[in-house]
Image (cartoon, rainbow, N blue to C red):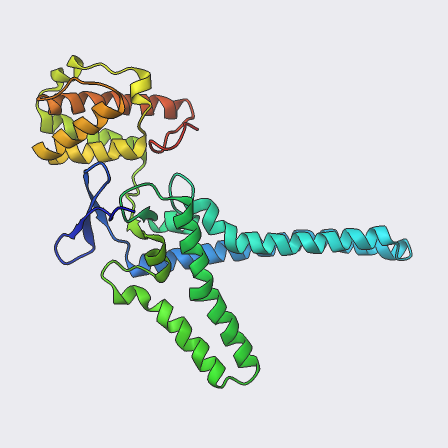
Length: 312
């Protein structure tokens, strides 16, 4: 496995610059500890509410089954239905606690409902796509970091505390305070998975695109050059919203080295050989046409989150 791309810290705050596998420098902001804690509490509240609602729904069905069970004099079919409902309840409780985080973080936004409300998301530290293995690893570690010590603390308190309770409390505090011990505010699961949690702008894509368009055109000073390059739908469908936002940052910063690298990457990806020596106009044209293509797709009810995903 190759070493992750270099990252350098900007200033003394939470701002970082991430170098993607394509060689693009991407400014990001590490999520604060408060935002991460708030997102976790919101997600746990959502999970608890979902578990309560499911329990009430299944319990109402079970009470109806119990009445039929007694009316029928305790037949085996009614008893089997009740046992089946109990199995469904156990599976539902397990899925809500474990699959909730996996399902949402594997989505195109890389964020649970709690993280979305807090304006943060999970990202890969190497600048690539957030993989299934990363999401599974970081969420499996949550059981070790949070749920297991809480269970042990509860068990020890019922037995009068003692050394077991103190050990469980120390275990919990070590992992709970872990983000305070590293500058990127990583929990143990992030370190194992190779992920981190970053801030995500709250602006809608349409507004972000419109603002980005004005900035790009103001920076270029030559919008007529956009018409010198035309791209087919197939060439535009290679990339999605994430790459559009990355390209917007590159155009805004207007650094020649970055423009050359990005043009070379895009040209190789779409099998084009033009634009060398005219990187700014090439990328301006690609940006505008990709933006228009994505906006058209959204008006038709379809989205393409990034180059790895399909539309929908």
